[in-house]
Length: 165
Image 1 (cartoon, helix red, strand yellow):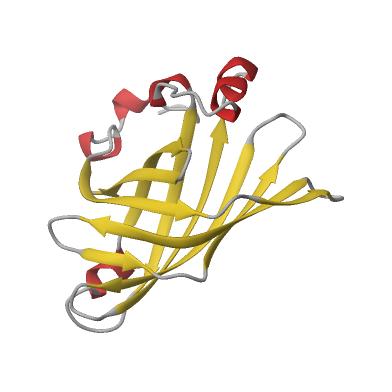
Image 2 (tube, rainbow, N blue to C red):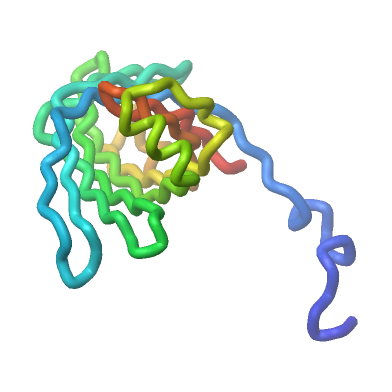
């Protein structure tokens, strides 16, 4: 075997990823707070006022006080660093953190900034959530790797979140 083996030479389990949907996350965000240019990036802050998590194994509200630190980089992409507090329908609190990236063409950005509807397939918007849940019904969240596909609406983002199997 050479140093750089091809993917096809690996066991089948290493050739693909399987994902299973776990929930849809919707966030309602106050108007963005613009900090402006900093040494690191053009910093913006999204304060989450509410939201919802809807899935087969979990339903929850997103509590006020959650936030998303946005950094618009010199290449035009935006990185996300969010901290959410979830309260399940059966009163369990779960911490959800996600990092992500959103990249779009100038044309898509202009349309979005004008409040026009854009096709979610016309830009890249992905997150990588992690969770901290107490022992019990939701502790399975502590031991999964999740990814999400997002879409930015005028009221805030919506994400489809999947567990990587």
